[in-house]
Image (tube, rainbow over all chains, first blue to last red; front, side, top):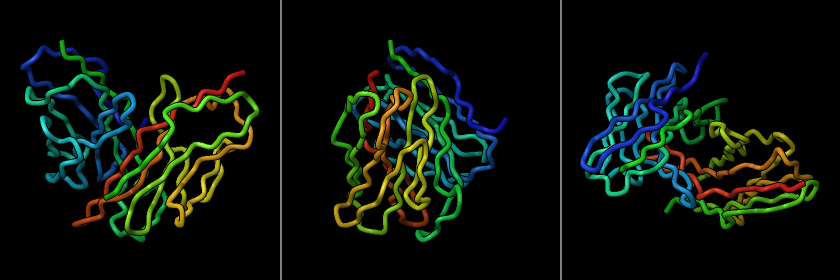
Length: 121
Length: 112
């Protein structure tokens, strides 16, 4: 069954602790993304990666870190530096359409995981 | 700046009424736009993309470059259409990297 698996589904953290959210995909997608979903603010991009061993900061990368050691995996660490970490986190992946004029089927269409809800106590 | 604006947080209609979810974008290049939907207790998923020019679940969206809009429309709303809808723009194509920029979302509530 192909798809994206995020774990854990729910996570509680004490202030000052780092936590790592797991994201694994078996879709053979090159690109992977982390978004944060807050009520009234939509989805905001934290980090994204379009190839193994490389990743780019999104719009709200401060207080977060990622790694991309394997094509299938893109874990997100929420560090103690993140001021407001309580949120719903979504991982996604896609085929990459690198050329701006490329409109191949499935390119740049994101497949999402079920999400991880982090609560800081 | 690359931006997606969905001006309505909530759109409430009765079953059978027409629906239009608004989306405006800001992008200097040739845009590629999407609508994603999140039904209750389900994953966020693609509804449609403008390059496909298709109708999904009765929804259509036309790209209007003059008005920089990509509004989502359905002539007759159904209760099962109740969900959170996000408009998204493929942007940031620099150095070979592109990223999807989402709007804040509009919650559609269809009442019986």
